[in-house]
Length: 88
Image 1: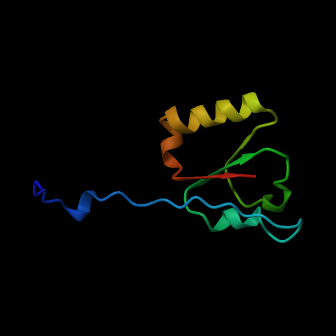
Image 2: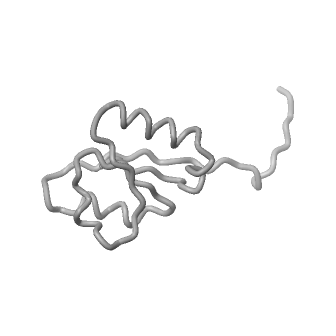
């Protein structure tokens, strides 16, 4: 084994991937308010519960829009300000 001394200053932060499933009107969409540095991808125009909450979002009404949003998240320098993405 080769010894490799590392430093925790450069340690990657593990990410969580979570799916929230449940009946309507229990607060799944509002849960994104607890996520830091978030951008929401709205796929069903269901963000009314976030009105006035200052949550950035991208409207994706079809698969092409969803693909374009995904490309933007992965390739845009503007998207680097968002550490978390919520699909709703």
